[in-house]
Image 1 (spheres, rainbow, N blue to C red):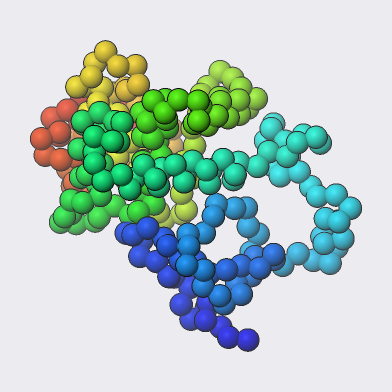
Image 2: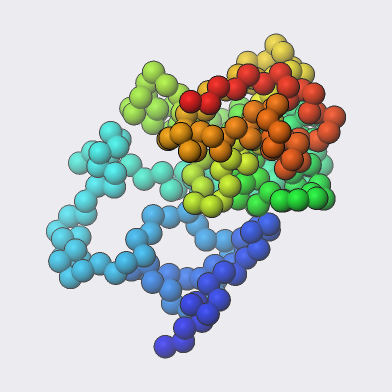
Length: 256
């Protein structure tokens, strides 16, 4: 069997749209066949199932995330279909050539153009980082203006929150280890803060943030999200255009 996958597992640039992927079989193993499309979001276990597991699966599959408070014996909670659908809408929206068609504020449009096209002197944002922020922007600014055809997305999010924790509305962005989640956080803070400063009457935006870290080490690393930190990402990573840096100073950020 050819071992092409192991010789060249990475097919895409981290800075560009991932338009190719290695095909995986039903056990999550590479078939050494390249598919000229983006891989769909899916739940993959890259380890072949044991004979006992395969027999058990025939008798009745275990519920996905049985302890998530969402799956029941009657219905399995699987977020991947709606994730793929949102991803498709975001991709179509991203490819609109005219910023006037984006249905976002002028400030958001400016930030999107900056992240996508600015010639960064240092570290340039990865595609996955920009896409994560694009998704939050699309759900917040764009989807509410598109009418009933996309209303189901927020209905799904609100429904999941009601079942999991009705007292706290949450929207999760999942990125791989090493993808640069701190940069994504800086981009989200910049987007929200600049808009909050320039549109003070809008309820969509905020300049106040609580960041909860898993420990002291991570908390110390997150200081780069503070506007006045010497290594602030807004300036050192060029997350914010120079003319918007003053707006970032209005952000009130607590890291705990």
